[in-house]
Length: 204
Figure 1 (cartoon, helix red, strand yellow):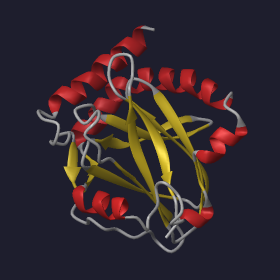
Figure 2 (cartoon, rainbow, N blue to C red; figure 1 turned 90 degrees about the vertical axis):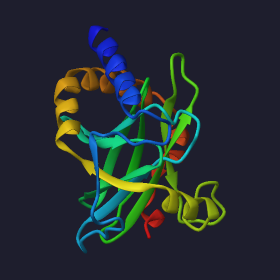
Figure 3 (cartoon, one colour; figure 1 turned 60 degrees about the horizontal axis):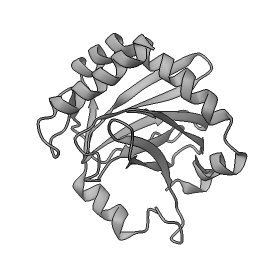
Figure 4 (cartoon, rainbow, N blue to C red; figure 1 turned 120 degrees about the vertical axis):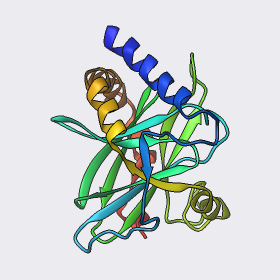
């Protein structure tokens, strides 16, 4: 519980550090390459945020496996983070007041998109990871005007030294929150988890 309280304060401090709802975390660095492509034998996952709701609160993202978590970055409103990974199955996590997860099955040479979506929380915004489909009939999809708007309005950022330092200071509390919420995630019906899964065909 002590670690969870520390994490709550740390994430709140991340939110205060941005200075305004449209500013991005100073712990992240604007990327030189704004539209990267994955290597032929890799997959790429792009996490993005574009919502006024919860815009002053920072979200942090991770890749999760049996050994723990890998810090992928801080995603502020109006930013996006691109991560290159091996093809195959991956589980990702977002943390703010809560932790939430997204499953994925990725193909080499493809780029996938994940929308970090806010929802009300007890103290501040919570976030969910929503798959952006390669299907024009889906609510969130890469063929929509919304997707074009997200890509135009967000700036790609990368982890800087201050972000790495933040994670080192908060790794234990992140691990505690991961364990707590992963147990809840695993109790969700398979149909719910399927809705929150990036499918191979979602890549472009």
